[in-house]
Image (cartoon, rainbow, N blue to C red):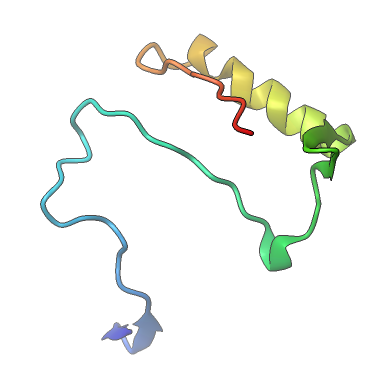
Length: 78
């Protein structure tokens, strides 16, 4: 950790040699605090969303309607 304006902060995890403004594919994982099951639960290897999970999913799938440079590819990994 480094000190910035008399406050400690965590170093960036971004790769220093990458231009994040360029096109690219990104794999996104969402982790909750203490890995709490806030969005639903996994039953027999399948995610069952609760009401909050459905809200997140709805807004996630709506992103391409607001940003023309987004293409979502949904993977079912088993």
